[in-house]
Amino acid sequence: MTTLSSANRARRVQDRAFDQQWGTDTSGGVGVHDLGFDPAIIDQCRRYDPSDAAMLREPVELLGIVPARCDFIDYGAGKGRMLMLAMQMGFKSVTGVELAGSLCEIARDNLQRFTARSGIQSDAAIVQADATSYTPAGAHIVAYFYNPFGAQIMREVQLQLERALAMETDCVTIIYANPEHHRIYADNPRWMPGPSLTGIATFTAEAAVFRA
Image 1: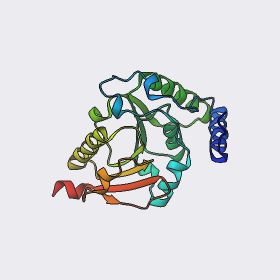
Image 2: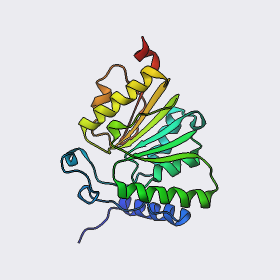
Image 3: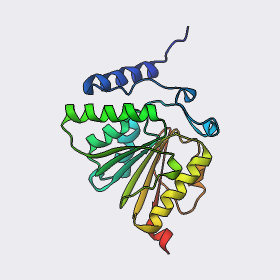
């Protein structure tokens, strides 16, 4: 019999409280082999586990981010919990990028339920797509990752963000929880490391570096 740690028990209580408040379904993990991914890329995919609210709130506060000025993108959005939190925080727009169709359906339903109960009206969308093919947009982008995929995909996403910076985006801030592949950003001199929290790395890149 497996015994939950006190931290895991507390997290489950928080998960249930969030869903009870908003009538949503964001709790519980889903194994990577249960998400319908193409076997050819499954080694680059990760299971679904919901983020804690602190994984976004604390870095945003630490970085001095003004949500109303920023477009929020959650790569590997899962069931959409961070999108709903970003809506609460007042981000200019909120986009979830998710490959698993089953999770996209749940996330869309969750956003509808959350909007109905909270009364929060936001420019929010769920995009079912491979993260490498998604084109990020916005003047000031906050990109959130909860270790959603492997290094190969992360490098491609980094290139997409850099293409945006070379065009119309002024600034990209990365909030990377459980940052398994943080060296992809840390070893690139065009990305500046920011303040970190336990289990969370942050990086920022400015357009000027890519338009010189």
